[in-house]
Image 1 (cartoon, helix red, strand yellow):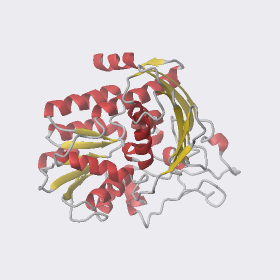
Image 2: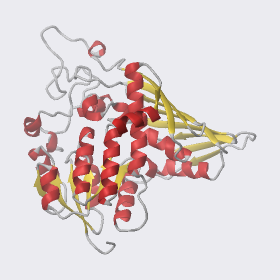
Image 3: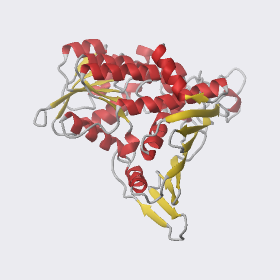
Image 4: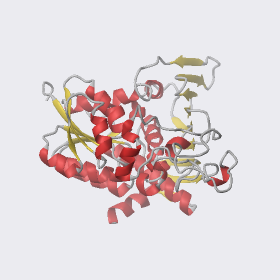
Length: 408
């Protein structure tokens, strides 16, 4: 396999499929993207123009995997389709890299894992944060014992994400599983990775849609002049401080021609769009190791950063992913050490590049997958538990969730 050209197909010709994975694979020696699959032919055709070669185009994954001889597939379709598309690929004897989350339910994750085991193929989950240089350094600090035994982790994620999560398909729980799964699975995996993969025991969570709703439109709405439905159609473009018109000339895959195919827009008004996800919330997780973690996410902000605090019995570390800094504070010493991590080119601070490289090395037979489908299942389990905890106002025990997934 190491000398062979790796033939890859991409399911989902959107921004992540083409703009991230497609461009990274396109620039890698020994890799050829031979085909694309998307239910929107206009978007797929424009996506193909951004890649090298001449990819064959398919509307259905079943047809693509039946006709193509592939070594690997990248699954970047909407989250609720990950299970179906990954299983189709695995049953066809194709290794898969599935962008997070693995699936939107624990049951879906288990189905993928069982199929991969039966097919004897790899299902790797796209947890790119594990490849972030700052978090990799933090992981080494923890593993070296600098902080002692870690028992507490806090992550506060601030992201100017209203334009991202309330304006696109992510806004609907039926499509994304909810933002604790779609967005939070990243962070729940980082917790488990840093802690050495303890099992999550119970999850509590609270969340709400406090600001990104029609009651908080930040300008005066005139009678007879409705808002939206999209930014590029809205009459209030000049007065709205949150206007975000997608550049249809630069990215024609999202223009009105593509929209006619599936009625999908990337720039729905984030205040008036139909949605059932949160714009802020906090989740608390207890692990069988005795450690606990809290994850805050807020999408009503001008700040974009993930801020971690990791506490052990010998010291603590404070981290800013945006600033690429780690400050270590020993428990019984004033010798504070601050690390400034060098900037790495590439999406998500170079993390996307590391993820793709890791997957390709595994396909070539050099090493193991950096993030397994089982890891993806546990992250989804915490996210699914958090979604239930929010809706039902209770603490959710993860083993009960796992048992229910096996029996259903």
